[in-house]
Amino acid sequence: MYAPRLPMSRDYLMPPPPTPSAAVDGDARRFALRRVLCVGRNYAAHAREMGQDPAREPPFFFAKPADAVFDAQPSADASVAYPPLTENLHHEIELAVAIGSGGREIPSAQALDHVFGYAPALDLTRRDLQKAAKAKGHPWEFGKAFDRSAPLGALVPAARSGHPTRGRVWLEVNGELRQEGDLSELIWSVAEVIAELSASIALAPGDLILTGTPAGVGPLVPGDEVRGGVEGVGDLALKIRGG
Image 1 (spheres, rainbow, N blue to C red):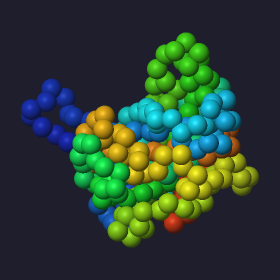
Image 2: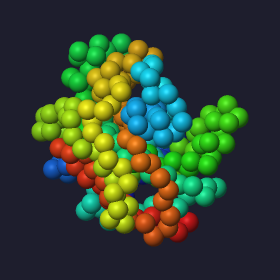
Image 3: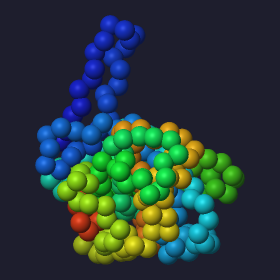
Image 4: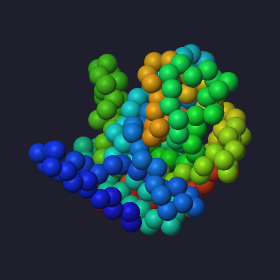
């Protein structure tokens, strides 16, 4: 298991926190993470299962802290403790996009030039907390942005994988298929998501974008073994431990 080192400096009252980072397939160097930006309801079937209209409206976004990311490639023997304050932890398998060069107001025709690589990711969600926040018109952070809520497979450089627009997106729990979709079903493509985000905020190297999940989201409990992946990109795996 990767253990980041704490940077030391006389310029701080206490040691700065470690730099969040992600594994890169075939490279001993790691990809330093800046922030994690997530697209909500970007597959029509998932929008419908959440009781929402899947019409192609402007995408909306939420965030997770960069230190919520941890290595979950199959070789990492990863696990995550069942988080506190929830009785309804859900899995959401997604394609993650790592930004390698930043910019503002990036045209969609040039957006893929800014991509470093891709990986499978999980958006773990405390669904009961998210639903309670929605009902009150409150932010979603406690439902989405908790500790170790973003398991990530190894990043595959786009120079090797290309820019996938089709490919199976899937997730199994204890060997049972729970989620299955295809990248071609994205309501907003990767290039369009990058263009939309960069119209609002300046993207920078180290930004990680989770592009949305297909239908079939559902609960996880302690003891579950989770496997998932994105065709042409890679797989991830982890176990859910007791809290």
